[in-house]
Length: 345
Image (tube, rainbow, N blue to C red; front, top):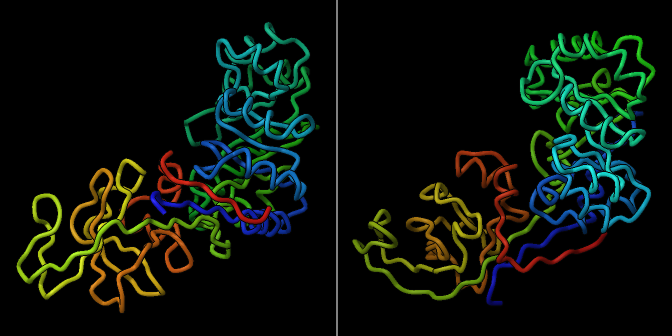
């Protein structure tokens, strides 16, 4: 093996979707933006579609076009950035449904593609995308008269069950959609886990599908195995890596593995990060560099051929904790140099 191998367990991903779907009576969609959080939207989308998913969410029209080519006709694909300038042909040709976020987008869409399906996003407190109360009050009757396929909003703190922002956003979403005969959507993964009051008609799990928090019962989906290029003995007092940040305190065996920050492995993993071999933790030795990482394998019974950054012993959130970030960033940073393998699905 000359390159690191990223293995995606599609059966585990589908199982995560099915568990989240079973938690509510709502339709369960799937968020596959950012190339399915770095794991490959075409393969992920097809596996979920075979399992019964009929609604997908992407970030931009270009992502939607690629997903449509992978899925074929039928499934609904919502574009969260809405109808941007220049999107009309792609939205029309690829049968994509923009989530309109403002009056400007609504005017653009109705003028460019009259009769073409659309959804609406309301801002209930995140201040990111969507119409605020005042704007919505002004355009509500006109917008609803055009027959939106879905009206949605997004929770800002759903991973924290006790956060008052969740209850505040739920109350405002109910107020802004009161009396409407239209499918509604509020719950992301965290919202699904809060309680059924947040589920409405369509839920939109994302990170939970891929094995990340806050879905504690999620099955791990991604495994990353990195080849060992060379092993060497390092005497006490010798340094490893740039600027000598790691110094051997004992006679040590150091493996150099073939991946680094060019592959999305954050430099911030030094010095707390680790990889695994045969259920044994092997700490990083020195700084993560562009293509290489030193690893202390002194306690292993033999020189390994590969070491695992992600797998059964260390999930995406464990790696994120060591790097001081979140699982989303670990997944979406995965580089293009990995050999990707898919199992199941």
